[in-house]
Structure formats: C-alpha cells, structure tokens
Image (cartoon, rainbow, N blue to C red; front, side):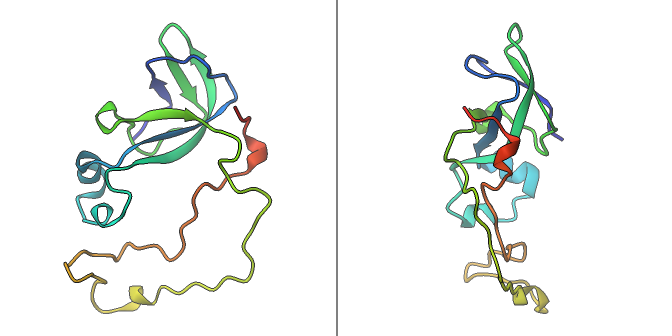
Length: 144
C-alpha cells in the first residue's frame, strides 16, 4: 500500500491546498511487483514511459523534512527506483465542462470461453471497454 506522506528533494513552489500529480515510469520492476508480469503493460505504448497515476491535494508541507502530506493514500508505493515524481496540477491539464451522452459499450470478448490473446499469446482479458483519463472535478483543486 502507498503512503500519504511523500519525501521530496525539494518542496519549493508547493503550497497547501494545491493539486499535484503523482506518477512514475512503467518499469519492469513496477510491472512485476504490482501486476505479476502479465504482459499487458509491455504490449502498450505506455511501457517505459512516465505516467501520472494519481491526482492528490497537498494537505500539509514540512519544509524541514522536505515532505508533503496528501489528502488521501496512494494505492501503490511511489518509488525512486521507478522515477517517481510529484508534479503540480496545471491549468489546461483536464477537459472541463464536457461530457459523454448516449454511449454504448460492448465487452463481448469477456464472454468468450477462452482468453483474448494476440498472435504472440499476450493475454488481453483485463482490457477495459472504456478508459477515462485526466478526469476530475476542476472546482475541487487549486491550480498552480
């Protein structure tokens, strides 16, 4: 399980109440530890790239310890080994005042008797029918 307090090289420029992204690189170590090396990450264009996993609000800052306390726990450990970083939430990071209406979704491959795999045998049974990214209530966060 992750933490609420993160130790940084510097807390300069961060303020209590500010929204931040917490993310890291999708590494072999991360994939093996948290996903059991299922092959899914390696088959995407995200493998090896930096990814923002969480949006959190800074609840407290300790300038002596160079640490921030977040408003909620992270579901994973943020590790230096994976290039973990905290980045300020910036204006324009999200679509706002938009929505989806009348959408139909099919996950027919989940009903198959066998796993959904590609030609190399990569298992895609955990494939999502709908993926939402960079979604939040913009009124909740102060922007940098």
